[in-house]
Length: 255
Ligand SMILES: NC(=O)C1=CN([C@@H]2O[C@H](COP(=O)(O)OP(=O)(O)OC[C@H]3O[C@@H](n4cnc5c(N)ncnc54)[C@H](O)[C@@H]3O)[C@@H](O)[C@H]2O)C=CC1
Ligand SMILES: O=C(O)C1=N[C@H](C(=O)O)C[C@H](O)C1
Image 1: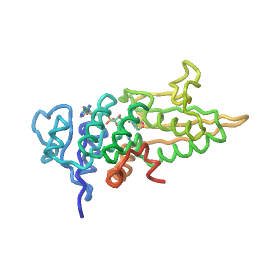
Image 2: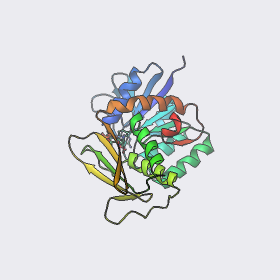
Image 3: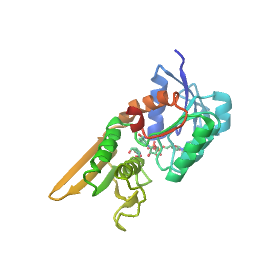
Image 4: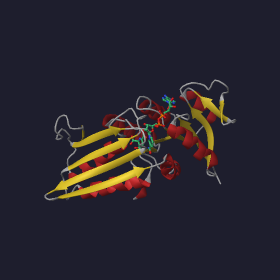
């Protein structure tokens, strides 16, 4: 069996640490390096044998990964993803915060280089299904709002999941312009108001509410543990090897 050579960016974060564990234990994967902001104080190895790199070019030259799992921050996600594609490495991007403009540029770059790139703002199957159901429901119940709720360690808003959900809903409804959400009531994403809650005790939760005359439809997904993301991540790492362009969302992979 040929193993997929994987690198993880953001290996000491909440998600990155779990991704490292998953890639080390997965029989199909070889974790060849991690991309961190700085070296660890005690060693230049993670988990005893995985080299830590602080710049992409050295990682590319020495570790030669096939895939980069990107789990850093909204500031780093674009340059890391761009540089990976330009160096022939397939990104699987879990980090939220890419703008529509940046996604367009990455898509062009992927196509130009013939390199697969998967954007997966949420790796959990339940959240992906929620997005698909919301895109289906909005055609019949167009008055909709999103509430996304996360742990208080999450700085950025709205969440990547809510942004993709709103874009998928707008596309299904045939309106992508934005600007329809009333001022001051959440963030307008593609015309849909998104409300962001950050509280201790939460992990990751999203509700999409559809109002109609005398009725309310609520679609809700809850991640109670980050383990909920790992099977989708494994799927994306394998699938990106078969692609030659950018895929925006796991929904396009699960069919
Ligand atoms: N796609 C999905 O299913 C999920 C995505 N996320 C997203 O993943 C991202 C990370 O989330 P958390 O792990 O909770 O954050 P975190 O803050 O715990 O971890 C981020 C890590 O990235 C490191 N980092 C920042 N800039 C870097 C750079 N340029 N190079 C290398 N490392 C860098 C930080 O030092 C930190 O250790 C967020 O955008 C979050 O929204 C989180 C959970 C699930
Ligand atoms: O920061 C998180 O925790 C999460 N971030 C992603 C997002 O922005 O949607 C995915 C999930 O919601 C957890």
